[in-house]
Image (cartoon, rainbow, N blue to C red; front, side):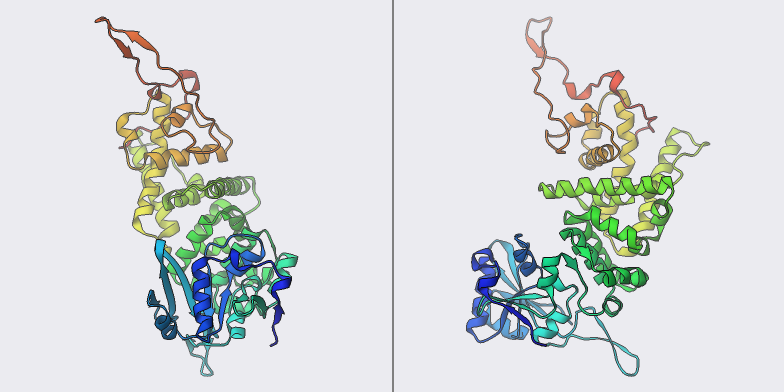
Length: 447
């Protein structure tokens, strides 16, 4: 196949836009007679006028040849060997050898056996093995041209997300490509090409064949890159979300009023998460899990008419624990964020209880989960159109959540003691006007 070659004069990418360490890798490979291309998402982002998060390099040099050229490098991987070149500041440039197949692509032999291949290939084969056309572009350091084997430049101009090759074949070979198609559509705002879009419906159940660790990594990546809400919207529309998480069907599937309400709640939560990520906030995995499981918890029976308050609180915690285990246990998610998510969700009853009393005890504020519990409370309140009480806003630094009004700094009232010295009155953070307290019936605090 003859690729489309776009000379430097006809595209916007200049060397000044490329990471300095990536240029060092490209030039050293080129000077030693190897092909050296900037590949994948970095080329796509540069053409879109964005700053890439990573700069990946592809070459016809084998991994051991790359390792010889760079003393500050290490070969990683067993079947799909890559070279990581290390620079100051923990910066890593990943160098891969052109491949003829994806790392996870299944190849069927004549006798029906399924093999995994790690074979090296040509630049054309490397482009054709990739997931979507806009990720199949190369930047050639030799003459600063763009090399396009897959029609990616046209799809960038027309704002299409299109599978490279037959999407039915691609999604069968590696079902995780379906998640990536949706992620790129959500991140760029591009439309998914019709044949690719219909293949998502056809092959959604095949996602269950993928390893739990891969699905876990792709799931967290889906939630952490600032486009979780549109991504989840696509996954609900295509049914892929329910193939991954069948238990969410009871909360989100269907056109009834309740299902629409729960879908809106989930998407509103993650719109807020996306906003926080875009303004530079770091969101713990436990908060992502708590937000994601919230619609399911909303449809579970949380009250038991024959239990006392303490037993009711224990029943609620066990229900939350069951929901998180049921939803996430197939995906090898570490125990720590799951346990923290349970504490965050359980603590919501404590927050309501203390809001009714008008004070936050010091022992509660000192809990490891307190900050994240208030963060979740603030997200849920904003997602449902409620106001976060001032008592909670004052318990954390100003600007903790960008949509909270900034509290004016008030002078502390001072009174004269009986001995004649001046002493401050009780701090305001433990007080809250009775008329503005939460009206939700609280469960007793469980520390």
